[in-house]
Length: 117
Image (cartoon, rainbow, N blue to C red):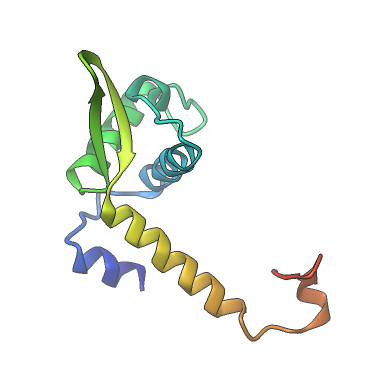
């Protein structure tokens, strides 16, 4: 399913696991109204070196998964934001996740009233 989404949207396979993890962090920050800057993204040293993360930002941008915006007249700071394609991808993943657990009623999978594994 993931490959067909990537192929449908002509997303390059250069979007590797590290880039996907970075994208997740960008989306989470965006959802809580904190728009991550390029500098903040490059400081995520658990994901890689600043040089590696800068390349992953570029890979995500070239794939159309993020956009880089400026605020007001400050042209030195770039803010990262997910694109419509990214939102579509996460909605698809949410649908798949919900469908995969929809019919699971085995007691060992129910925690606090929520079906999970």
